[in-house]
Each structure stands twice: as structure tokens, then as C-alpha cells.
Image 1: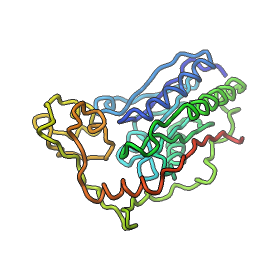
Image 2: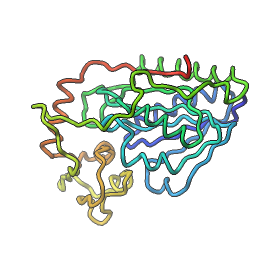
Image 3: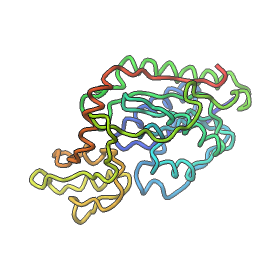
Length: 280
């Protein structure tokens, strides 16, 4: 089948998912001799319009994993903003070295509901947004080699198909067939870590008032008139913290900090990327 355009579609507050999706989509575009484009729906302004994709297009669609699922505040965007018309799709999730649990299964299912034909999918470990040490430097060279191989193999499947029907049935995520409840984060002592209402605080002495945090918040939750305040929903994405040039924002919630310590104690082993193909 002839693909005219490959589009990297992603929600990516700290750019990990963005980098992975762009890498896969660019390799596939090259292998398929197709145009390359991007659709970033991370920020509120980018979610005012819907996007439709045709049967001669291919979408590499990525989100991060939050608590083992597609982030609950992101799921409605996936469900309502994007539609395909028998459009080949490659769902991708990134995860912070603990586990991706049901996130990839969930993303595949939602894309199938919206008219996409999922035939290949991947879950790729990256540095955890909560930590400077958990999977630091990931994806690394070894990961990127596997990611490139996956992209080339997926492109080969498309090149060998006469039509979308030849791509096979919807991809199945082996070992993660059911979408399970969101993972319950734990503290160091094993008790539930209850930090749903935690929000970042601002070191006023460090803050220079640049307003970058306001611009990068995917929920539009930081008060532009007083950036020390976050009256809106916080999804703990860390965008305002990771992108602050003065290191003026941070979390001080004890339960969240204990959860981070638990992750760094128990999940330092290397989690490898996993890839899946339809009927293969």
C-alpha cells in the first residue's frame, strides 16, 4: 500500500514521548518514501481543533504512562480529537522504568475505536519524570537501535501490504490483554501514597518571573498573574519543574517524596523496550 504521509502525534509534557515518536515516524517516513509531519497536542491551545487521517496516511501515536494507564486527563483528548479512516497506526507509550501495565493496551483499543488500524506497537522506557536517577539517559544508544529496527520492520509490513486489510488484525499486547485499574502508588513503607492533590511550590527567591512554567503547563493550570499559584488541575507531569531555568519549582508533598524514594529503591533495574506486531 502507498502511504503519502507519516505523522507523529503525541502528548509529551517533558519531551520524552515526543522524541521517541518523532524518531519512529521519521524512520518510517523515510522507509516508505512518504512526507513527514507532527501533531503535538500537549498544550491547551493545540487541542482546540480535531484531526482526521485518511487511508493513505500513517500515524505514530504516543502518550506517556501514568499509573500504568494512558493519563486519565489525556484519555478524553485521545478519544475525541483524532479520527482515522482505516488509517494504519503505530501506538507508542513511554514509561518511567517501573512498568507500562495497561497503557499500551488501552491506547491501542482507543485508536481502534476511532478508525485506526493498529498493526505494530511499542512500550519504551525513559527517565522517570519524578527522578534524576531512575532510568537516567534513557532511551540510550541501545534503546535507539531497537527503536530504529522496530520502525524499519513496521515500515516493511506496510510496504508488503496491498491494502490496510493485509496488515492483519489489531495488534495484541501479549501479557497485557486486559485494561486493569490504575496502579496504586506506594510509599517506602508499602502503604498507599496519597498525593493526588499535591501541587508544585515555588521558591520565590529563585523565581525570576519569566512565566515559562505558565506556557508549558499542559493543563493550563498555573496562574499567569501569580505563577506561585496553581489553582487548576496538576497531573504531576513535571513540565513546569523540568523546564524552569532557575530550578525554582519543586514538590514538597511528603507522600509523593516517599513514593519517589520507593521507586528509586525498587526499580533501578533496566526495563527493556517491548515491541508487538499484528499476528506476528
